[in-house]
Image (tube, rainbow, N blue to C red; front, top):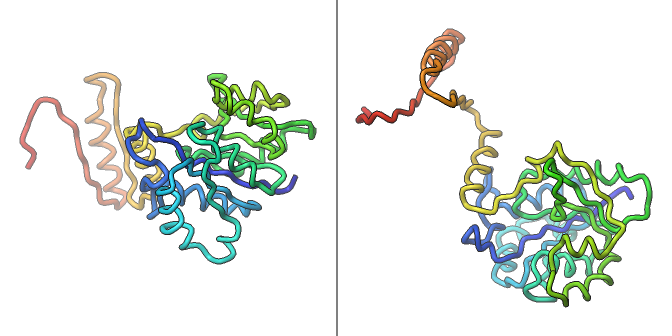
Amino acid sequence: MDKLGLIILAGGLSSRMGQPKALLPWVNGESLISHALRKGLEADVDDIIISIGDDDQLGHAIQTHIIDTLSNDEKKKVSIVRDSVERRGPLGGLYSALAVGMSPAYAVMAVDMPFMPMDLYYDWLYQVNHNNWNVIVPTGSRGKPEPMAGIYRPHIVSLLPSILAGKDVSLQHALDTIGHVESIDASDYDWELSNVNHYDDYQWARALAENEFRRVPLISVVASKRKTGKTTVVTRLVAELQRAGFSVGVVKSDKHGFQID
């Protein structure tokens, strides 16, 4: 299995975020959805399916503002799929995407997992040394499976309608029902598997991503308690950097109350 397809789960109510996650700005002029899309295109996956839930407005925005900017060859690889079964969460999106998939297997990437790289999927794929699997699921350091970052074979769609018709439509319940699920130790990849559910999470994640492209280095000096020498460290650090020819700016926090000049 030399290549994978990619399913980007971009639907959902985003109730905790308060707005659609897929269209949130990321870095270098990208949005979260265009960031995920670019990773798939750069990895030269066979095809990319964007699951938008039942939100036609989101699908229209992705089409007009993102997909229409791609080259003709790139457009041929990308399709947008609306849920065929409403209000069934990520499992409904996965089912609808797999039902139209043509690749032998699909990496699934939640749009709110911005630090997930494509090469990890191939690493996990090659760790399974047999062909008798339906799903490959990474497990983080806390022992929690992460099915939103798994690898799925399209033939499991025949097993999903009965699960979608039931009360428990969680991905974990589906995995327990499907069987032949391979668990991969991903305890060293908690950061890659992290997602941005709340706006504060998103702000922190975006700031960290921005820092990767920052031309001016940002150094923070922090300590767990007072009187540990933070100011001394900062003063000597500034002096050394200036001696090396750098122009340095300093911002120091203060809880005593003052008027900044």
